[in-house]
Image (tube, rainbow, N blue to C red):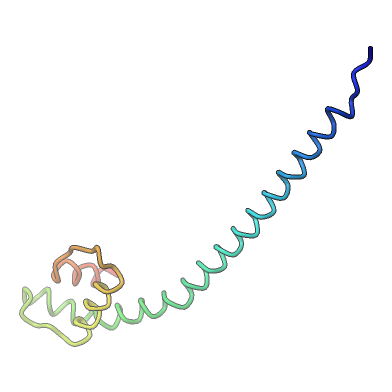
Length: 102
């Protein structure tokens, strides 16, 4: 008695087609996520950089005066950093040091 090979080929073919569809969906989703991430980095990163660079002089004064001199640009940067990173538990002095290192 001969085994009908079409009974084995059909399920394998259907499984391959199903896996190909899932892979195509994964690639499509991956492309959308990558595009969204790149757009986010392009639009927000320059603003972050400009804001932090503008606060460097104020941060240096703040650190040198041991927290006595607080410039407007540093205050703006501190407010922005705390709004963007609400779980950030760093002191103003630590954030000023981080801004100065940027």
